Every structure is written in C-alpha cells, then in structure tokens.
Length: 390
Image (cartoon, rainbow, N blue to C red):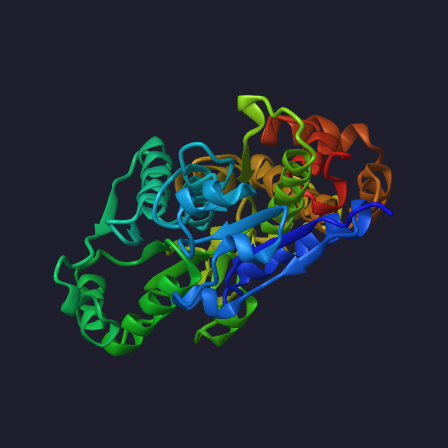
C-alpha cells in the first residue's frame, strides 16, 4: 500500500492570505494526493511540539513559528512563506511581487484622476517598503510625487490607539483631493478611521485602496474599502506542487525554487468610487464609459452622453486623464476581459460574446497592447483554474 504523505501546515488562518494559501494547497492535494495534513494552532503562539515527533514528510510555514535550523534537523522538505524577511536562505519561499502590487495600486488611483498621491505603510517592513517603492515608481512615471507616511519609531507610539492621532494629523496635512494606497487592508482601515477622526470625506477628499481584498475587513470598513486582489490561492497550489516534488526527491532548478504571488486586479468599492476632477463633463463621460463597459461603446456614444462637442470633450478628457476617450474605452473594456479571464472558465470566444466584441481578434489586439500578453497567457498567469499541470 502506497504511503500517504503527511504535511504540516503552520499557516495562521485569521487573515485571508493564510486561508487562501490553504485553499490552494488542499486543491492540489485533492487532484494529486491524497495528503494527510497536520495543524497545531498552539504552535503559532510559541507552544510548539518538536518537529521530529510529527512523523511528517513535508511542511509549509507562514511566519516564524519554527526556525530553518529546526526544519533541517528534522529532515523535512519545507517551503517558507516569510513575513519579516524577503527570503529564507536554503529553502524555497512563497513571495509576493510587492513592487507590482504597489504599481497596480498607483495605477488605480491615477486612473481615477488623482494627482495628489500618498502611501501609508510600515517603514520597517521589507514587503511594505517594496509596495511603497512600486507605488512611487508609477507615480513618478506619471509626473507626480508621493507623500509617504513615516511610521513612528517608538514602540509605545505604534500602538493603534496612539498612532491613530499621528495618522490623522498626516491626513490633515495632505493636499486634497488625495488618493492613498495602504500596504494592507488593515492599514487601509486605519487610514479610513483617521479620516473619521478628522472629519475628512471619503472618497471626495481622500480615496483609499488597500491590499489583499479580504472581504471581512473591506466590508467592515466605512465606507467599504477598495483593494488590490492577489492570486494567493494559486500560490498555495503552486507551493503544494513544489513541495510534492521535494518530498519525492526530485531536483528543483534554482529558477523554480520560489513561488511568486502576483496582483490580479483592483476590486473597486466605495472608498475609491469617484473621479477626482472638478470637470463635471469629463466625470460624466467616465461614468458613462464604466457603466457601459460590457457593450461595444464608441467615442460617439460618449460624446452624445455629454453636452460638449467631440473636439471639446476630447481636449478636456486629455487634460484631466492624459489620454484619449478611445484609449480609456479600450482600457476599461480590457479590464472587463481580465475579470472574466480570472474569475470564470469562459473561453475567449465566449468572453467576446458576453462583452459583445465582434470576434476574438477584436479582444486579442487591444488586450495585448494594454497587458503585453495574450488573453490566454494572462489566464495562465493569474487564474487559479488554469495553473500548469503537475
């Protein structure tokens, strides 16, 4: 009888990140297993049994419940998902492309017309610093500067009931209207609470976008928080596939020893549901484009929905958003395609029908121009339903 692998999961599940990792791992196990899983919640609080007592074959670790030397001593195949560091020497790791996360957050706010932009994170945390770096790079590319919140050095001041006054003061000092990216959804909640303390209107004066799209946190916020979604479940699936190879004694090339979790799209909720412009006609045109993005709208349709001539609207559109009406229509339509590629199993031909493109070619050409890859390549990269076969 073939031995069933036993895998230890030291993954904290109070956050969406950990839960999505486990979803991906168990999905892989159902297809290629079965595996037996062992979990010890007490271990995440420091009361942890010795690893050799588990009689396990592999382990996936989120955080610092155990040290790398303990894993080596137990002879376990292991994958780490570090929090405080970027890598764990000698072990494969699950990493987030934080630079791209930051860039996507900046792009979301720029698309909404914000020219004052800010980032609120943790200045002593590597992944938060990377997100701030990606955010600032994209903002600089657009010709603007980033206002950074500096986390207090004093440990006592870092406690939220004290730090909230510092964040509130920082928010008051920012030019308005301002678009703010927070390094996580929890940090986004902090920013929104700071806005309440100071009577700042969201999203009219301050628009906020977080990271991870944790439904519980985002909907708990008032107003609900927009967030950059990550393909964490796919990362869990790929981590399980990698661990399976390690437990089987297969060689892993250096280029294949990391699992990269990437952002997929921004889930827009009320905290950024606005166009930051005083130009009412441009704002009205943008609302029309977003409201009709699932159909074959033309520039003439947008012009007809406004009270301006085509030439005047085009000029004002370019002044506010830095691009043409047609480019904005294309961008919004492509985002609809991305959504259906990652969240459904519809074929490209079916997506073309749903979004009322005349054929697949009319999707592929603008999609490649916007995303730098074909629709199918995008699906392979970002959809949990289309991970590569084991």
